[in-house]
Image (cartoon, rainbow, N blue to C red; front, side, top):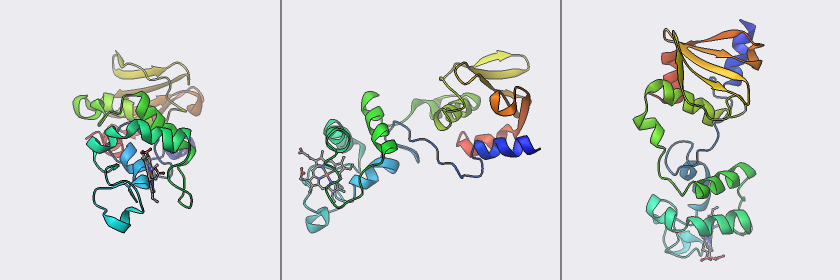
Length: 194
Ligand code: HEC
């Protein structure tokens, strides 16, 4: 029981850990929500005149179409030069800078293809990999070995598996024994894989 409680804590089911920023524009953990809102204090089509704080009227980040247009320059100014946001405004933190660069490297995608098109188990595994790369890396392909549908993470030496509607973990955090993480339906809800 103690181990399970620790695992759930680590996996952030109680919401204490914030998930990593996704390298896509949309979504609660996407670039718009987690990075560009900083820029939208001045660079938004919803702002006019003095409310723009002097930012060029054509440089905006509140829609995907605009954000993509200015994506490269955004990385230059906010990550490479560090000259945006301007003096006096809270700069991007290291995680935000890394995410903005990752978004550029990925070709400025709008949404992640995975969530809407993949099956729930794959969606859940993908979510775990994106949110907790310290535990589930590198990204892996799903395999099945009756009764388990699972992924093995060679770098972190861990398994995530689903069988009979339960989610299981096996790896260093559970000292190499199989830990039952509970009803997989709950995890689908937690991960947004509904
Ligand atoms: C407090 C208001 C403010 C915030 C917040 C802000 N900017 Fe700006 N931005 C400006 C102003 C003013 C200019 C025009 C002066 C300049 O280019 O330095 C500008 C210009 C720009 C330009 C055009 C530069 C060019 O060379 O034409 C880009 C790109 C840009 N900002 C990106 C960003 C990004 C990305 C963020 C968020 C990480 C951001 N800005 C946050 C005020 C802001």
